[in-house]
Image 1 (cartoon, rainbow, N blue to C red):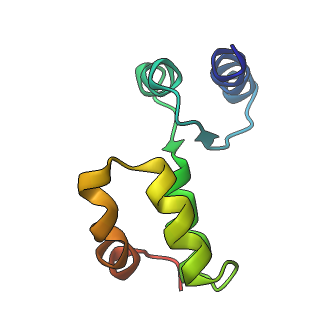
Image 2: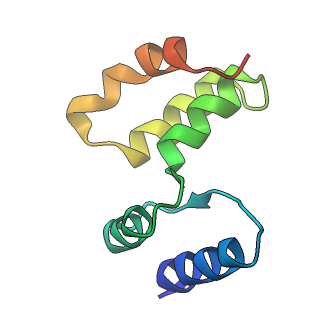
Length: 87
């Protein structure tokens, strides 16, 4: 339920002139955010950017990554890190 409230709040605040991104991993929350044209950030994207910005050790980032992505994508962390625009 928190994801729904977050998306609805973000849409309301956008209508009032404040723009910010929505962080959610919930499938319905992501759908709501996309349907409303809000910028969506998932935990897997956030952790990659944090490692790229040296705000999190790479080893910890990999651990979080593995909790956020399907097992078949575990090996894609380095590739995602290389693509990060945060540096």
